[in-house]
Length: 383
Image 1 (cartoon, rainbow, N blue to C red):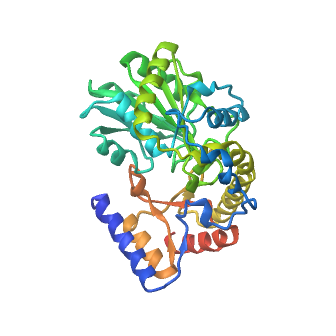
Image 2 (tube, helix red, strand yellow):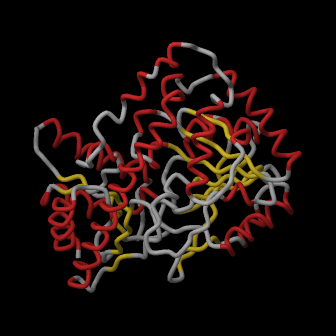
């Protein structure tokens, strides 16, 4: 089935949503990925730590306050990985961390390899830094795996490979074989390895996923995470990057990143002073998110067999669910019709650059009663 260029399709859906909002027409957002808008229980006073008196003293450190980096190192330790706080860099977000890494690794016109399908962010971030992004495929054979063979044709200007584990929207963690293949080609080609692990705290149907990959990589590697997903607090603006790999390359990268970060000094002192308490108190939020995601996935699995013309793709982790639906209409039309007739919003598969139609992508974050009703009505409409 032919496709309209994605930006036109997305704009058509965005216009339809804006028209509903302007008319005051309510709808159910099954694409909602903001944990602060789905009725999760947040501990009272969780943000009180931002009033820590230490925040009144401004003594910036480019890599982040030592106390804050030690608190983040504790998050790695919670998952079973010992991390030296001196190998951590704080940023205001993972998006900013990408920007800094592209500055570190690339000159204008250089290339970074990015996964397909994935969240549509990397092309924009690369363009802002004058960096080309070249897609490599994730192949689905009962589970998603990296198709490493096409990387051999990457241009000489390639400087890094980017992977997301678990991926959004496929929900797939990198396997040991994926990681071995990535590190082997990075070693052979002199590339750096960037691993986005923002959803690593939310494994579902997988035993002992491999996480904190930069800590165990044999090449220059970076693991990205942040409070936005780990403790459901996107508004506090705290991200982190673990720098790993052979000591000489790691130390050189940290020195260069210190210069880059010193140019911006973007992480606020109140957030850094509060980091230890935020990460501690955020444990309850993470637990609530995990329970919500598992409950909604269980609901989806219970409802799906009633609609044999479609199916759910396996989810190993994260907050998203891929639903394969009959390709009798374009994904754009499926989403627009669902919004018009049922007042339910979902993402089309092309938003994540799925290789073919037809898929819809739903968030597993909404209130469980709302999700159960809307997901059932969605299936009735699209299948």
